Length: 137
Image (cartoon, rainbow, N blue to C red; front, side, top):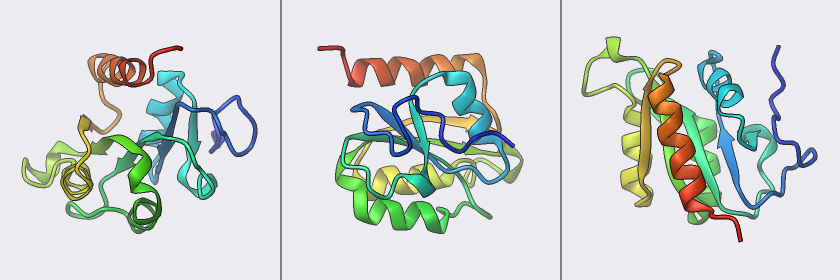
């Protein structure tokens, strides 16, 4: 099983640039590994105090996963953007709907909607947003 913590900055990842992610089936975790960006599983991010990008899956028929909802209620003010994984087989209205809901409710940009594990183009979009959001000092 892949590590739930892929950040190279220690067990609680206090880097100023991080992706907090939730993965149920492994699609999101697989994308995180391909992005090669600092990331931490949502279960390990409860004490995060720095800005982050949220990467979640869509639950059921377009719902926000409960763990993500609870996390965002506490940390939404530091969220810089949302990435969501979904499945186009559920139809246009439900595809990645968790991202639409979160972005709308918390007024943060929806960076990308990935069909399952996404494409290289999706990864480039995410990396571009990541680096443009946090330019090196």
